[in-house]
Length: 301
Image (cartoon, rainbow, N blue to C red):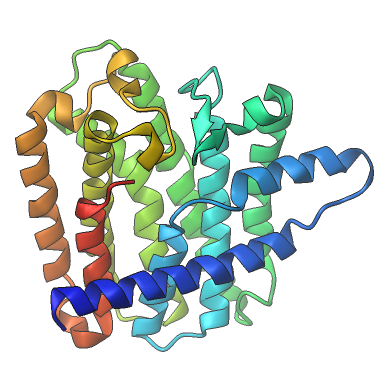
């Protein structure tokens, strides 16, 4: 498949995934009456009408390698997306990154208020595990437990939350490339990695296949963050839908601040090439996973 055809196929597949995910999340977050109404409005605001749905897409595509149920993969992808959306709500809070713009709209705590945003994030987080624990997600309780455990590890102190702590602690400090890499492998990469691992769990993949997918995901996760760092310097607020140059103003060390633009771009491409190499054993079935790797370094938003 040539690059143009691969890009078109990827665009169509991602758009289809985003549409299905939007419908699923909208049904899941249907409005409530009474005092909880404001909470569910904030949860919907933070989760709907935006985002690339990269993580659910990776889960669906990884599950597809092993002919696992698309419906099961959709529910797992939704759970991962709920965790991602909760993390964005909390990241934007004044006590964290203090960002007023997300996906081209006011951040959740601006659109509502701080207390509601905190509670909306909390509720999105626990809803993710409610979805995973439901027998509709998979009839085998052992599979459900494996998914719950994997998502908990990826999103907790040894994953996304741990990475956020390093991020906060390293502000206005001299940190090296190893620290930045570790921080981003946890903060951004852990959830991306589990998105692919989840597909392997659903498909009862072999250890060799699972390891290959995890390595692929780890590399694209780090490349994704380097691309984010580059967009913070080279992008526009209109294209990215969020505040730019905020890392430099906050005194945060990034791949760009440590390596420079050119070397950061080269490092991202090396990671993408490594990631694509991990997919050799899957042949043509992994075409969209290869294409998403290229998309990560070429994206403008």
